Length: 496
Image 1 (tube, rainbow, N blue to C red):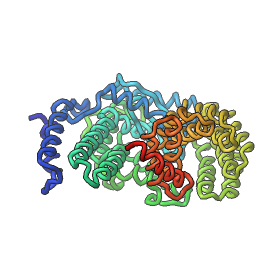
Image 2: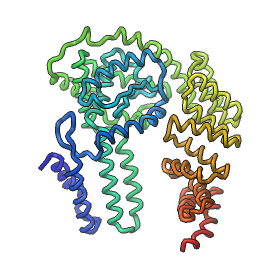
Image 3: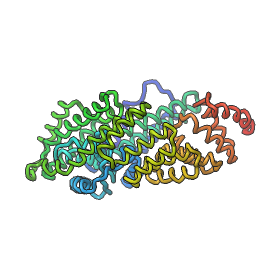
Image 4: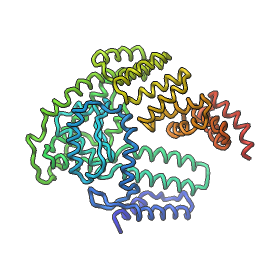
């Protein structure tokens, strides 16, 4: 029996509840299906050489990375523009990549323009944030961080998380069928979908340890001091504390950063584990002092100065999100007086103007942002919002279209595009954008009502009824909720 089959057998033995909730026949089908999947979907891990469950092929893994890259890029503030710094750091990452287990995979390195301290990698995409980079002390620490992230890719950790999530979804779908439409089956599927989505958000403890081992090995093989990997983790903690202190928060108050660090053990335990990993390394030889602090510090000096300015901007964003607009403007003016060439600063001015319903002024600020970065997606989105709010729907559509070219999955741009088409009574054009937004924000108080009207106006009564039902369920007390209830009274008899 292969390791993969043993794994599946063990999982089933541990996971089957003592009392059966499904009919025996349906449960048998579930077990057979899982066994078949384990037979046809095992792959050799390129790092360990062991066979393991894998429902994602390497080509699919690459495609997932390609499709996810724009969303990740803009979720982390877009790219930080410093061509010389990028070239220097990319050279280090490229050497790690080329000396790892799958050097033939596509590769792109990015510095993300956010103060949130983090780093991540997907097949074809490796990134570190401005906030973490600014607190690293030398080249070896950077190599340790990047080696850890490259290790996740080489060991196919993303593909494995997707495979486990897919298997969980499959079990829940079959379970829903087995319940035969009994009350509660929809709830089971809904909860399962949420759980599966969360499953893909982060790596587990075992995968983090494996990435640590690989990162230490990669950096040592390139002549870096592996003991700097321990200091790199300490610098991550320093960066997180500094970032949260600037915003007046603690780690537990910031759910995102808490999730980032949750799979990492306490500092002393991490230090002991990494010391053990270093002692197990094959013989290695340091290049120079193995750290190269001088050239690293010189290379990131400009980024560090800008990072300090962004700490002022970050406070402005926090105040904006609390609707303290006058205080936000005060912080923003301070940030611009320190550095007037950052597109996000003018974009935030535009967003403040939108909240104040000064749409023409907002448009001017968004254009100022685009003068500094012609591909700054949030400002195309902002121009779209300004057009939508001022009833210039055709102009709004053009701006939302440009936003979606840069960030294809951006929920707000899909909703804005759909609503603009809706207001122009171009319902067939509105539907795909509203539907995409509804898939990402199913409890939005308007989207199902707008979809219901759009489907009804294009003659799809069945789809209209479904969306009206969702509108009544999600937001019954709104104008669209009342309208949906009235239309259901008229349309339901037509489907009988």
